[in-house]
Length: 258
Image (cartoon, rainbow, N blue to C red; front, side, top):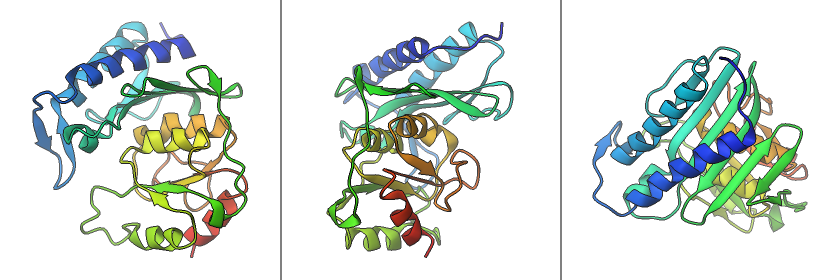
């Protein structure tokens, strides 16, 4: 069995995993640390176990890359899963987190689903078909200048000691825009670019499961999505991302290359 999923398959998986997150929100959490500020909860594992089990049952020959259990990045059919994007928010009771699921075929992203269970917002994207939030078609903003833009970014878990830690870029963009936000979820950041809520997003150090679904959704909403060097392979290492409307992408890229 080696057939491909469709968008309703991803929607069902995202909603059901999101229900797991919502049901366990603000309850006693078992928290472990993968690094100094890189944590994981038992709810990450509950969500991941559900998703891995369902994919294995329905698509047994497919490969899966997932945040907590890793996996292989090869094969005709590839999934990228973040069972709980925004774990630090979740662990602190901040209601900003999501489930992120992407499907790729022969190395090309085809489907993406991101579900924010606290706002009941389901973001979907399909290559060549568009992107939607709760059935409403998404379109990136029309901002034409950095001075009139609102941006969003994130910082890596090794930010305490990484030489390339993004703070200089944060200060630079904060001084030339209406503001730079930091929400704590790369997947939601990309969805908000797709929805026109943010005009651009960049981040320097990520993993494929962080940006696969959101990158596709932003692309399908009209964003230009590359790594911070301007190359289209934003899920290939070394990992970074720049997503913005077509007016702002070259302006942001120019500053990120400096």
